[in-house]
Amino acid sequence: MTYSGDPGSGAGGEGCRYVQVRGFLPKYRRYHDIFRFRAVYSLSQQVLRTDASGMPLEWIDFREAVRLYALCQVAYTCGVPLYRIHGGVNAVSRRRSVLEINSIVATRGDSHALLKVRSHYVPPLNNQTLFARDAHLCMYCGSQFPASGLSRDHIMPLSRGGTDGWNNVVTACKRCNNHKAGHAPEESGMELLAVPFVPTHAEYIYLQGKRILADQMQFLLAHFPRTSPLHARLKRLS
Ligand SMILES: [Zn+2]
Image (tube, rainbow, N blue to C red; front, side, top):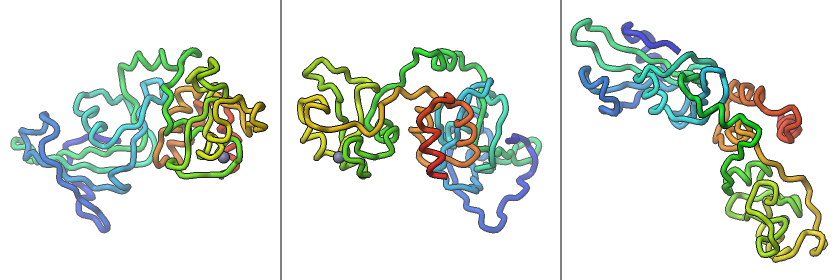
């Protein structure tokens, strides 16, 4: 990724798609207050943000990436170029600012990242990432469903002292969940197809990803524990 005051080389090239965005960054208001985006990928493509040591932190959109640049928080970048953003023309130098945003952006000053990599870190439980952890498969009948056909099953029911935590929940289709009702699986003659696990922070970011590019995937994989059950799943998919 580069940030320079060079004239907009590559602007208007074949197949470019421009989007104009007005004044979301105060820093640029002294320019023409207009950005022009050349998007190699869809503007909805997420950027992977890491800390300066390369530890994955979160997914951000292009607006947040621009904001990090404006605040001088970007330490370095990796991956493929996603967007080329043209700012306004500087009134003094008459040069147009250009900002290229890559698929992975490392930022400074994220001490909270250290907390997240400690072994006791537990990511928040929500159905979206729970269903992703279990590959949208019912962990009892093995069938795959869209999110609307799935539910969170407590292996040991809450009414029996079970917890609402990653180790006690699995994805279940509504039919299996109804059949199991307030029982433990063995009491209903049901068997779990996989052992539930607590995702690490890097695994959690992977599970949150909407459309993960190959270079982002490679980066995340390098931070998965060697024993991660996701390795086997990803190998099957490749
Ligand atoms: Zn089922």
